[in-house]
Length: 152
Image 1: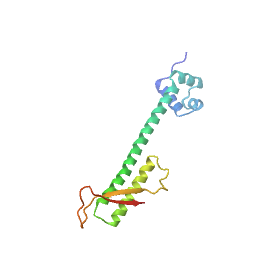
Image 2: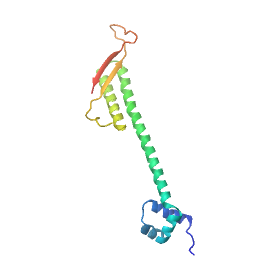
Image 3: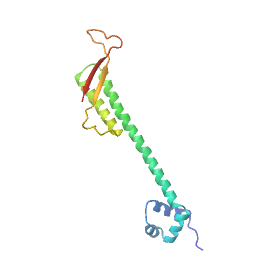
Image 4: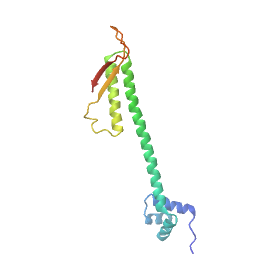
């Protein structure tokens, strides 16, 4: 009767199998005959273990992808917020242009990241901006807003 292989050798066999190596390659690498490999594949349930490893890797990859996507959406929204802040600064044509460009780019990035990129390159982004400010010629009454619309 053959002596059972130690745990380390069995784990090395499984690791090579899980990587997709052939029985011939594993046999040559670890000096274990093919029938022994088949025996331990059944005994140690390599197929089930390999599937668990694949599932774990897929879950981790999906989590990392979701985290990265969330971070990118947050950056796009921050870009939009910074553009909005620029619009609140004292009136200057250059600031308005920069603000509108930042908001537009933030919207485009967010659309692209969220998978709504069908018309990102061709569709203009319409930005409706509401500015509430006191005009020197007359005070603004409560609830009155100045609405400016820009199309980029």
